Amino acid sequence: MALVASCRKTGWLTLILYLVLGGFSGKSVGSSIYTWTDDQGNRHFSNTPPVEMFDRASETGLSANATPNIDVVHASRGQWLARHNGVLAHLSIGNHMVWNEYPLSSTSIAPKALDSSFRGPLTLSPPSMQVEVWDRNNQHVGDRLFVVRMDSEISLNLTDAYGDGRYQFTRKPEADRDLSEREEFLSGQWALVNPEDEDQVAEIWVFSEGLLTRHESRSNRLNQHVALWNNHLDGRWHLRDNEILVEYWRGKGRHTSLSLSSQRLQLRELSHRRMVLHEPESRRVFIFRRERTR
Image 1 (cartoon, rainbow, N blue to C red):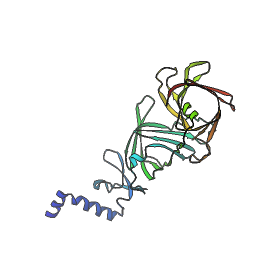
Image 2: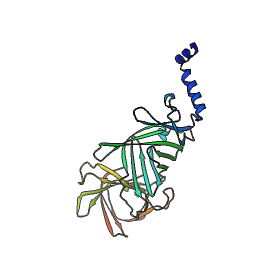
Image 3: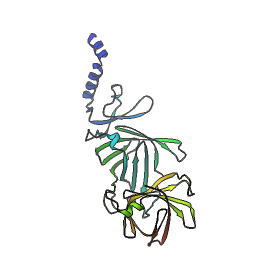
Image 4: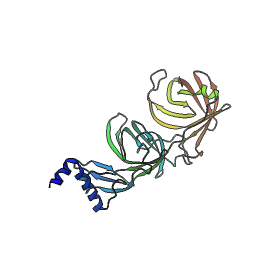
């Protein structure tokens, strides 16, 4: 009894019980990820479940990081792409998560995001990743919980805690090239305006470092504070002579290859404040007013 009391004081009893329970249950503590539900109904994931929850814990079939020296909290930040059940998932991770899904069957250059898309504040405590899902009015409407694993700096695996969805994300490729003098001049934020009323804004196109990001705009008037909403299209761009070639990430080919949906735009006019592009295939004219420079 004295030994037990001493162990309780020193904390060794917890370690002994942990190892004994683990040994008798046949669970490999520290290598596999377990899940359990606490008395409040909250679901947890860890490779070291607490002793009092050990009998409730069950293996998820997932293991801890194959590369333990990866700082998942830092390395997971950025843009990611994955294919899953006929959709392309585009994931942006920072302090918030933005998860957009697009049908792979779509032939549109700018497909509409599916209703399964979501966004909200992110809490990352590996191996758990929890997202408070917000609606467009920034109201909390639910939660998503994932088990996260990274095998390398460019590989992110997420398993839906409340479903059977497993997503294998690849870090979205980035442009790594020097811009020409003319491309430097073109770079910046441009407002796509209505040809019949150039004070009306339809989209915002951001050309930077060889990357193009297209946003819907909450403000529909030029020279007002423009709030960006829903990054609905992005890719890389090149200016050759008087033609801009845009290769969008959301294409028919694999997102890690060069086989991406493309758009060719003829440069008709370019000045400090105004740009006019023409798409020969659709015969559409794009008129832009510069919002701000890089």
